[in-house]
Image 1 (cartoon, protein in one colour):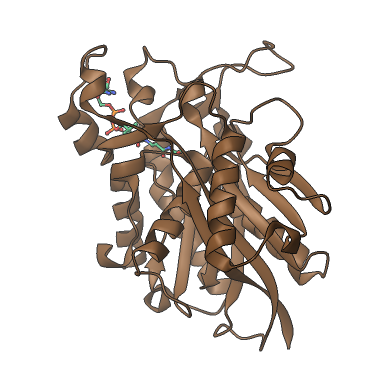
Image 2 (cartoon, protein in one colour):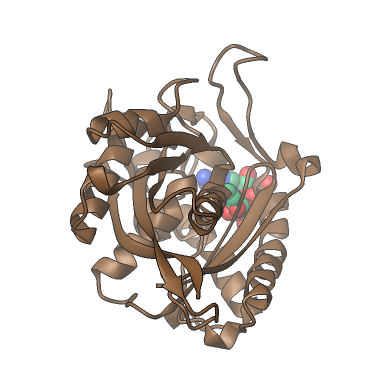
Length: 324
Ligand code: UT7
């Protein structure tokens, strides 16, 4: 028998304000048709004034707790993946901890941009299988609307705000790939690609939060190959192949990247959970949002094999394989 980190609950939160592509036609040289055909995005949610990443993260956490039947008292630690924290410090995770009424345990943030949720899940898995936690709350939460340059049509039409949360708990497994829980993960980064996607401000440089800058097309050309390789590496570590996968739940940046990666893996789009049309790119929040949507509508069921992959600023990319 070995210790596994098994999913016990999932939930999400989206701001009330929904903005359609046509909104941008008034102020930018762009069209709904361009945005849809190049990215697959039709609408996105934007946080209200004063609504923060910690607010969205807390709501997603409450939804995951409700779905699992657990309470905050059952949680040993909170990990938030975000690149858009409320403050430079303390961590958003500590704000969520307080909001949930937790008076014990630990909380910290992980920053790997769009791959952040894969990094956070990998960290949580390590804490659980090594016996340092029984149950963790892992959240991806972002307010990318706060770092948009609203005059840059090549970026501001692509991103959105939201949060998703997952509860992982320790369970005994056989040690085979038929176990429930996280079976493998694969992490990668290469800082030589930094200029492809970054924010042009920061604490130790400009003293400001900065705005997002992206070389979309060069990044697009990197994405599919790197995502397919990391997905294959995660599958290989678990002794499984793409044909074993029930659901790909990818980072939702661009429908053409999502479809290209599925094709490279040899999997049909019927086995991919796609939310990019409704959420845009919510960075670290996009995978847990898509997991939550896939569970809520009855597609992802207990025992099914779920493969998630993501790439973003760094570049940082990775994949995680888990049996739901
Ligand atoms: O989540 C982190 C990871 N992010 C990604 O993986 C994003 C990766 N990149 C992409 O998703 C795509 O590259 C984009 C959706 C950003 C762009 O699609 P593309 O097919 O790579 O287009 P492009 O950048 O090559 O631009 C084509 C044309 C350009 O005009 P010219 O130079 O051909 O005259 C752009 O200036 O489209 C122009 N363009 C726009 N036109 C209308 C760029 N943005 C817009 C816009 N509306 N919003």
